[in-house]
Amino acid sequence: MKLLFVMDGLDRVHPEKDTTFGFVQSAALLGHECEHCLIHQVERIGGTVTAWARSLRYEAAPAGTEGPGRIWLEGAPRRLDLARDVDAVFIRKDPPFDSPYHHATLILEHLRGQTLVVNDPRGLREANEKLYALHFADWMPKTIVTSERQAILDFVREVGGRAVIKPLDGAGGYGVLGLKAGDGNEKAIIDLLTKEGRELAEVQEFLPDVKDGDKRVLLLDGEPLGAILRVPPEGDHRANIHIGGSVVPTELDEQELRLVAAVGPRLRQDGLYFVGLDLIGGKLTEVNVTSPTGIRELSTHRGERISDRVIRWTESKVG
Image (cartoon, rainbow, N blue to C red; front, top):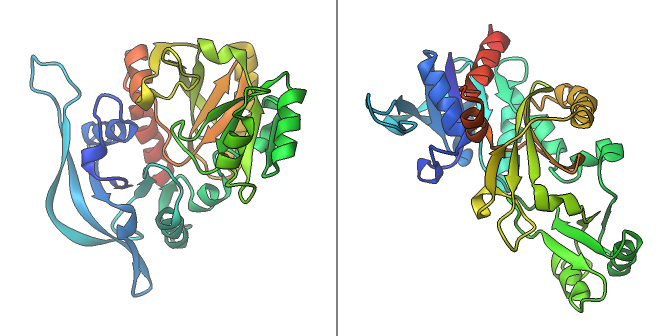
């Protein structure tokens, strides 16, 4: 196969923990070709969806040394016809889902029925990573989405005096703040996140189990690949890896398996093939679809290159 990875520049790729690196590594080791382009290099030229791309190469670490190896770009940029020259497109641009990301999905939409796109462009546009989880509200903590300060203040008291407020377009823990009834900062935090009542924010009841970690569950075509537990650093309620959260092995319990079984069919229906669910205390807090991470850590804990499964699945889809 020839696979195109629509992603950030390679200067932002950390081989030890980057899921896209894992995909490229697996694709190369399984005998496939990889191409790279930036999000704004997806184009429509002469009625054809194209990308201004360069070859993406992988080299394993030298024999007798440790390490994941390296990837680099090779050759001059050239225009690829994504319906003819490429077997699958992986959209791996890191959040936020901004205007360039949105425009790229609208262009890639024209590949429908011709080239596999992971994740599906229409699904990506529909699945805000905070709001999409509301399709599975029975599995979530108590949650409201509002721009009204008083509604948020009332909610915090209704759920026991502690809550978490999140911007709808944030990622990686950015902008996630705690709310505590009566601490004097409530109104200021609410006004900050809602831009003084002009923008919606999500507010969820505080889950004490967050101190034990945030479970990231990776799904492929609606089925679980496995999970990792991200434990927050001292003095922080956020467990995201890039802000210092540590990663430990974990498994899914019976309740979590039921949750995954409930969510999986809708993900598959919406073309959201590679997805990361965030769970705290068995409750679903977010559905990550833009550029889910965690496969490198999961592979380390399992002693297996889990990304191989994603590439093998892609082989089966493009036939």
